[in-house]
Image (cartoon, rainbow over all chains, first blue to last red; front, side, top):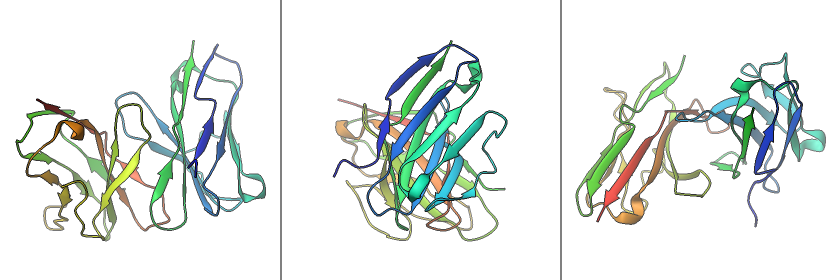
Length: 111
Length: 109
């Protein structure tokens, strides 16, 4: 079992450009989370899905961020346009009601 | 609003010394509390949760509702314990985690 798989691992883009992150959760996990982790901080929730439904997106900056989870499996998080302050590690996690399992994360650098 | 505070950014101890990583929380109800660990170049992973009342890798954590604390303890630190430790809170198992800012534990030989 590969666990939660995220890609890419690293991404460097210029400000105002779009960027997308992909997450494949553990098979059978209905709950999927996207977190953002700024340098020196703990992860902070962006959005939580139960199957294909976004049930908690109150912390997602909807002017530039969007997410989808088609068919309740894989998920994509998009930023358009990116800003310098978006530089962070973006973590995906999945759960089946007990513990949350995290992916390796995508480190985004906006220059 | 819920909040998790880890007052120490860095804790440095010698091998064999006792370790206590502090965690305080604020939440109006009865939350689920967790410790997550991230070893160098590895993903964030669950270390232990208060409902299990278990000891993992020699670590224990006791929930003190009166002091709203969930400190992580180990009587004798090992070099392989060096890692980032995050305390986290959730209103229930399926809800999202609120993390503290983390404490880096350095165990020196």
